[in-house]
Length: 144
Image 1 (tube, one colour):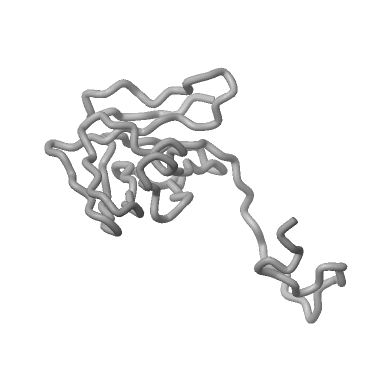
Image 2 (cartoon, one colour):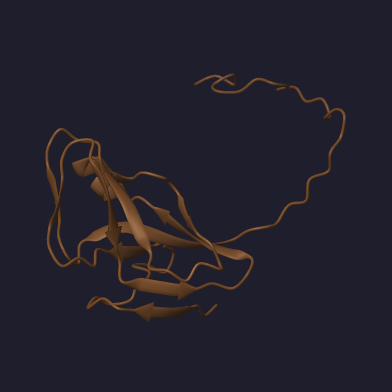
């Protein structure tokens, strides 16, 4: 699949690091360092603009290394870039650690996954079919 992209940053295009990678790293495209204090959030621009085909979305997801080592994650995970959006891709980063975190230009801040999706039509009914789970949710199936 080919996707049209405009890259206004000085960084390479996102790419897959391995043959089996699902996501491509997104890099910060900023003119000055952003300091995220504990529990602070910021929209970090990437300099990337894309044109997805209808039926696809781009999901902005955290990088596991940043989350595990630094407590930095993407606030609205996954963030969705719709096929009709033509603006710059931004990443809402949040600092869940107890220490300041510096976001530098070119730093890998998130990953982008291209995913196919379906459009649903609602069919209003009076009742739903029975299942063994029923209305159990939020941990009702246990933890082990």
